[in-house]
Length: 304
Image (tube, rainbow, N blue to C red; front, top):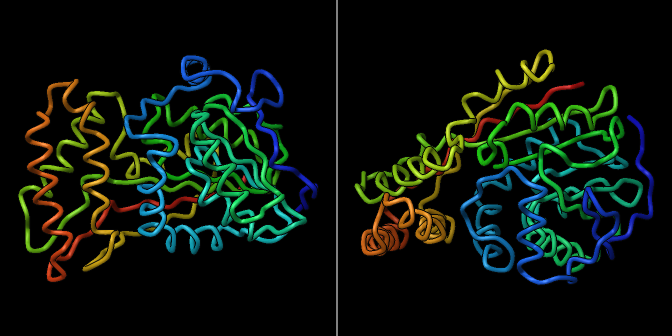
C-alpha cells in the first residue's frame, strides 16, 4: 500500500469547480446554487448545525460497527482516504486519527453547510491531515487513481444513480485500493414489544424516499451493485444495532421530525400525525423494557 502525502491543511475548502474556496463567502442563495450545481442527492434531512446532534447519535448507533468494518477492509496508518458524503465529518475525523500524520483524509460532501461542520469537527480534534471538498458523489473532482481507500455510509440511498456513484468511487482508487460502502435496509427496523407508531414511522420514511426517487432498501442491492461497478469478489457483512436504553433509541424521533416538512409537502403525513407519532416514540425511548433495532446495514468492501 502506498502512503499518502503528509502536511495537508484544513484551513481551506475545495469545490470541484473553483479551486480552494472559503465556505464563509456568499450567502444562503449562493450556497443553494452551488448545491444544485454540484449534487444529485435528494436528501431531505437537515444539514449543517441543525443536523449535528442527530448525526452524533447516528455515529453512536452505527459507529462501532463502522470502525470494525473499516479495520476489516484494511484501513491503516499512512493511507490516503476519501470519505464521500462525509456529513458533519465525525467518521472522517476518526479515519484521520487512524491514518495518522503520514496519511490524509479528503472529506467530501455536496452540502457546504455539512463541510463547514466537518471542518469544525477536525479543528475540535486538532487534526491537520484533513482536506475538505464540496462536491457531489457522481462528480467528486478528486484525483483519479490515487486513494488507498474510498468510503461512504448512508450515501447511495439518497442518490438518483447509486451505480454511477460506485463507478466514480472506483475510479478514485489506485490499483489495489479498497472501496468500502455501507448502507441501510429501512424495512428491517423493529421493536419489541411491537408499537404501531414505530412501524408507521419507518413506513413514512420509506414512502418519502420512494416519492423522492431515493433507494431506502439499497443495502440489499449493494453486493450486486459492486459487481456491476466492476469489482470482483466483494466481501459482505450485515450489522444491525439494537438498544434498550440511551439517546440512541431516540434516533427515529429525530429523523421523523426532520422529515416532517417533506412529509407534509408530499401529503404523506400531516404535522399533527407527525407530532403524535413523535410523542409515542419518545415514550418508547424512555421505556427501558422495550427493545429497538435500527436499520440493518449491509457492509461491502472490495479491492480494485
